[in-house]
Image 1 (cartoon, rainbow, N blue to C red):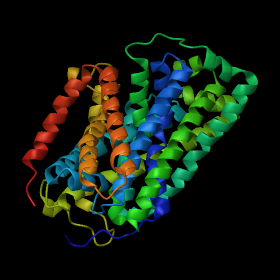
Image 2: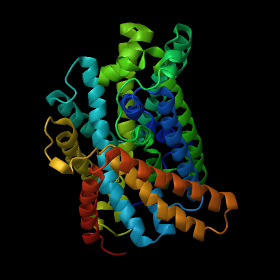
Image 3: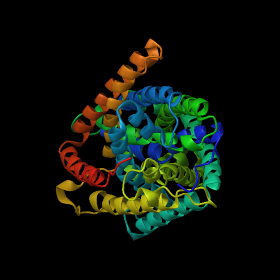
Length: 448
């Protein structure tokens, strides 16, 4: 390795990364899906958001505890390696670098383009949207690869900016809904549209995308000043804040317009709600802020994506570790690893388009929602880590060693069951692709 990653981030950046990665596209993108999944049943939708938030907070608390024990290169990979073993740590790292980071980056690039197209009146699945998706993906990659400190400042600023529409909708929407009776009507109207399968589980898995990303904050622990103190604080307080703001935003949205309007509006549902409360001009301005918030989320995900293969190479594992462990002396970034990360993001963006956005899927039965199933997979991969933590960490209190990890295991199992009910047969075909990618990882694993 030419030189090590420097300690260049503080607590504020860590909190902004947790909040900034999670809050953004998901809450706008999935709010309408939660409403549709529950048939407009507002209490059931709120329950889904609450359950998703509790699962996130429990898991984040356990990882925050581990963050006080371990500090190496890439948080979750370090934790998997320290608790379960070197091989398991490698496969967790491989999954995150080859599937988790790039799938989420690709989806977030499209979601950012999606809301830009809504603003401009363009088709959200047409050539304009995909061209914008590619532009956003490359642009945010360039920001991270060429100036990581500027990317950190962008993360902090967009985190502050993105809270504006959420807070305004939460407060103004709730007050307006109570005054005009829309909120009470939405609460008491029950199911107003047909639902299929298990609506609560489908809604819960949808919230998983909106809540996901907090674990990526652990990817910068080697670059975080006083990481054993600052990372646990960022994970704990960041996730609690996120859960609260999401639930209140969802309630505020229900106070702005009838649920049926948001459900029928599709991708323009949120814009209609903002325009109803703040006039067309005000709604448009706030929706510009929504686009900025989506780009902030993409930036946070890209901060993890550009470091994915570096975390493997730093252990002399994975494909050509001598290539991907090199760090640019001017930018202090693992440039080669970053390039491979964005290349895979581009491939997954092509898959997302062909599997989810075309009138006839390119991949037949092998088409799945890459915005949700990889997230549920990482929850399944947490389970062995939590089990071995309970076995090994004898210095911890009973609450931290047994109670919280046990709750986290139950939460992860619940997410896996919910994914099965929400996606059905698509889970089987996803697992085939997952197995193929992991097999490539096994072939290229190498040794210490």
